[in-house]
Length: 338
Image (cartoon, rainbow, N blue to C red):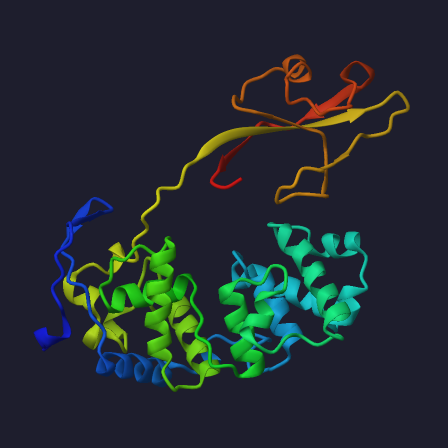
């Protein structure tokens, strides 16, 4: 039976989420809540629940490499790439000396290629500015290209034992549900709020263990769609479970704007029968990569002749001097970022 003292009623507009109204009883954390939260997670955690090659090591290079590869990538997809990179470049100095094209080729298929470019920039910064040694503080790690707040906290705690709590999608979800907290997670104010919550949750526990526990818990138990509430060690004090709002949390304030575009890739040959490819020069997530000539449109049904006259036809590519060999089926792309 939960004591009402665990809650502080806050007058807020009723929130609408996924078509269901829910009342907002915002859980105000107490030191007792924080101790319960911390102890329950640490008692639940076992390293063998989710074995990975970068766990139980303190090598900053491999931990950093794994964290960069796993940004916006599932573990199952990223693991083979981690193993390939470690085999090809066992140390940060060897990665720093690698050719750009070799690294991009090894990254091929993993997506978000800006990560690969930042991987090289960071490796070269470590090699040239830090004598081949990774910075051992959160602030120092944040100075490396491609290393954001979460990645810096993960490396600092796992590799160097720094007392820093991680905050990622899993942690947002666990905290929002445990405290039945509808503070939007996609605002600066919201991020600061949840960082304070997880910092208090960490307390004086060993950050390396606490961070691994909370990340594994979010990946295995407090999942987005199929939370294991019936066997959850936090269930006794989970505000969202008590209020029936588990699947309504966490909350985002901003609606993602979507723009639809269509990609038409062309196989073209010149007078000598050579196939034409192009290198992307725009500063986007595919910068410097090679591809078949691309015409981007807002409509799918253009004929080949119309593509050759389209304003987005690649600059410097004389359509009249080339032979159309084949074109792809228009590929629909829902763009949520640019």
